[in-house]
Length: 427
Image (cartoon, rainbow, N blue to C red):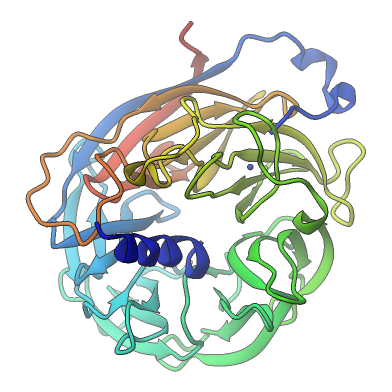
């Protein structure tokens, strides 16, 4: 890869696309101190899918765990619906190709059966932005014969999140001088209506809605000249009119300086704990000291939604400084999901060159990686548009509580299904 091409790739992954030291022990419940770490992962199935030219990107798993969907980065891959009814043998149910000029980095199921969305970002001047609505059984389409029933014109879009209970779709706004969130009414999927913008100014990278608390957890990756960078919490009790509740400003904190030491840069992904007043926030760095995952107290002890307090931090299991060209993104953390089982809380995360990683966060002041699976099963046939090294290159992980099933996408080797359990970690 030429230096120019590499700079282009890093810009696409980090700027348009795009959590150091353990917190205080004061928030640590007595019954968590000294407990053995838990969290094991076991592969159930794998598929390279149809392996078109290019790379796979974000994945989602339907709430019932019967289907998954995967996006793509470069090439004409588009989006892929994956039949997970037999989790030991995931099968491609359909592929909706895209233009080589446009990438579909994110995909997400609508809560209504038969619909999913895919984001659109231009790869060049001929590419398109916005979001496409795909019907695979809602009205016109089917699993085997899907239909693109609408396009949503909200400009270049890296990530999307449908409200879990209301017909509202949220999309990231990549313009740092504007509010970070685009808000879309999708009550009529074939005729969506853009309602407006919300959230702090700045480049919002991703967001997740907790319907139980009516909170949106937001990761702002770039501030621009006058915007915000860091972790923000929005009130979405009125889904069409989000209001900022609180935030943690990265600009006021130190950068990463040493592997394993807490820093705050390039806030990339934020998710909530379904059982405890905690949030898990990841930073993504392409070069030098890798980003890690922060645990924020948002009501667990001294923190609150208005004043999130970092109390724990971890890096990926083999984290090291990324100095070589082919090490870009290798050891930074990426997209994760939360698995709550009894007194145990685990994160499962697609962490690029680590593969799929399990972290024990039962003690939020001492998050610890406990197991991993290298997602490098496949012999890749098709060409890659760019290469950031050899697989694994896991993008993310999503969990279906209904089927106790984890679904992961690797950019190079396809999709995987896993069982993650709170068994005692390997010594």
